[in-house]
Each structure stands twice: as structure tokens, then as C-alpha cells.
Image (cartoon, rainbow, N blue to C red; front, side, top):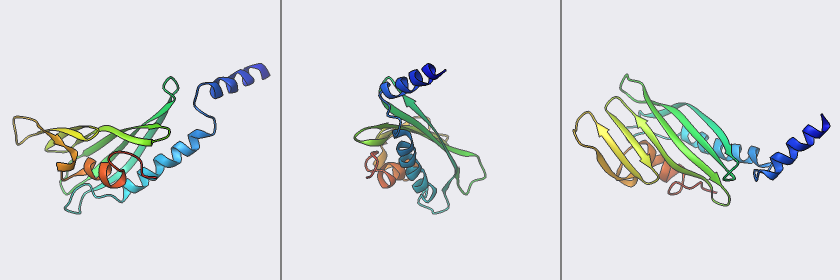
Length: 153
């Protein structure tokens, strides 16, 4: 039994993901999530993130961590809106927002780093562009909580 314990510990340390790193990685992600709790999703002031949850997983082959942050979006409409955001943690840069989706009653928007594509019930064709041109959600996470999608330190 002792041999299995030693092998398990050696496997964890040799995987490239340091044993002491997960708490720090988790704390840094939680700091981003805490900032999201106070963030306005839209300019009207009545839009907030609620029920924010995350899943944090190590990627031992790339020596990184990945996280998916999911949240309800509370708006004045009486519909169920959701946001889902993908992050990667890698030293020395820390957490980076790499993409996500936001679904509301009137549109579905997909994000890849600083670009978006939005499909709306009001238009037959997709809108595409830079996140900086948007008036909502992901933009504020990308530019205010984070610095161009990179963790502020």
C-alpha cells in the first residue's frame, strides 16, 4: 500500500502540475468569479450575473488548467438567459478568457477571444465583429474584469 501511495505522489509531481499549485489556481479563478458577481451584464443596470459556478480541471499533458464558468443572466425579460465562459490557466500569464457563449431570449452569441458572432431573432444573417464593439456581457468580462482577456495581477 505504501508503494502505491509513493507512486501516486511521484505521478502527481512528475505530471508537470505541481501539488501546491491547485489552491493558488483555484483562488485566482475565484477572484475572477467574485468580480463577475458585481459586474453589470448590460448598460441598463438591471442585468446581473447570478448563480455563478465553475468547473476547474487540470490538463496534465499541456501542464495547464482549464475552467468553465457558467452563470444565469438576470435581465428585465422573464426568460432564462445563460452565459458560459472558457478559461485556460498557464504560467506565467495566469488565467486567460478564450471563449464563451451567451444565450438570451433574442440572440445567441459565440465568442472566441476578442471576436464574436451573434445570431438574433431580428436578423437573418449573423453579426460578426470585435468584442470591444459590443454593449454587453462578455465585453465587460474581457475588458473590465480582465485585461484584454488576460488575468489582472
